[in-house]
Length: 486
Ligand code: B12
Ligand code: SF4
Image (tube, protein in one colour):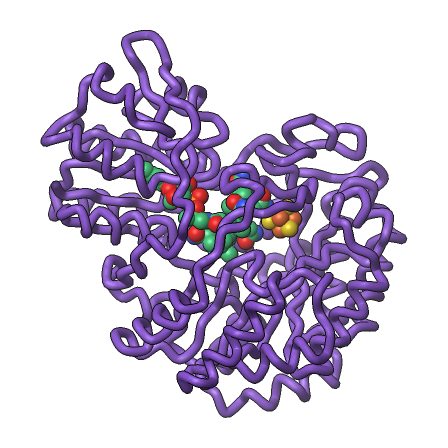
């Protein structure tokens, strides 16, 4: 069968606002993986990414003539699903459309009610359920009675919505094939790494080698992949790196895992294996939790090729960290950042402002934390009570502030500010973020450090993109509003 897998089209402008040129374009890893698996089952697959315009997807449908369309989206993509359904109704009314991903998994029944064009919702992981479903499809929509044995799907049987219960998870992630990147034409030329990794050599690959999380941060929806952490083995990871080196000439890797560095013993062995296989020359970035970082560990990671570690530091106020249920202390955060820096890793700090309990004072504490610690790059998101999280599901955000809008398209944590804490305004948050960015990125010491990378053309391109973002966000913006021709 011919299967078209689509990430719902959402423009960079919608996601990143004035920083649309500096934002990263990440590939839909889930669709790459599902597409690769479907290929192994003998299907022909095409993938479209979220930067496609709806008309471009229509064009792909016309030329590819799929037998089934699968759509993925997070909450921020939900407002664009109706238009996607309408387009497929016009282009190929007889071709079944199924959906999956974070948002529809949270609200499968509502999804079916809102979008009659959708035949079934795949709740949770679909590496097992999607191939099973396709076996039943033949060439057309399967009968409801045939679907009863496929775990993890929700569908209509006449007027009734049937939920087949949770999906079967892949227990051993080593059973998964390496994603076949050619599923996305121009993947390596179009994929733009995040601003904080602009000096990493291209082409870069994006890896996700673990699933699940035992923590319970109140701003995060981690229910879908479970509490138990599953990870690819070291052998699998080494083989995967060899594969992307051989077939795609990959020069650097970005790990999107939450827990890559969690098991210290494993990471020592990983670093050794990378060196033994001469793969430590491929530089990589990953995320970590602060609890196990010290200088020795940072050095071991560096020897294995790691150059940057990202931490979800969130806030410089202990009160805010506690309200986010981060299970972290300011002292430990600072110690981890210092140790990583001393061990030769650049620290990429992820922060949020506008959190429950946020005040001008707590924002100032965050600004101070950022300036007083050896952090190399920062991103500041606006706190967003995402569906699937403690603050949204329990409605607890209401105690701490108000929801400015329920338009999910602004639930992107970067360009939109849907939630404003009591005592602050959206403008306060915007101004506070601009100020922290300016104070951080425009320090002479930091500008000098950036100058080190100026031999690298992608750094120039990045500097131009970031400058364009800052220019629209700087105080100039105020002048622009007063004098539109300024
Ligand atoms: C890694 C990750 C990322 C990565 C990679 C995402 C990707 N493209 O795969 C990056 C860094 C790019 C990313 C970005 C963002 N992320 Co993110 N991310 C995660 C994280 C930590 C893990 C996801 C994961 O492991 N995926 C593994 C894959 C295999 O699982 P999956 O994507 O769910 O796909 C499976 C199933 O859902 C299903 N499926 C999915 N789609 C489809 C489609 C069809 C047709 C079918 C049949 C099945 C199917 O099958 C897949 C395979 O099993 C989760 C947290 C979590 N614990 O879930 C947050 C999470 C998903 N991200 C979130 C958010 C908010 C974002 C950002 C908006 C944040 C930001 N400001 O940058 C952006 C938006 C990106 C975009 N699309 O525009 C939220 C989503 C909340 C929500 N209600 O929407 C989460 C839940 C974290 C949180 N804060 O709560 N993210
Ligand atoms: S933000 Fe917290 S709950 Fe979410 S994946 Fe990271 S550690 Fe787990």
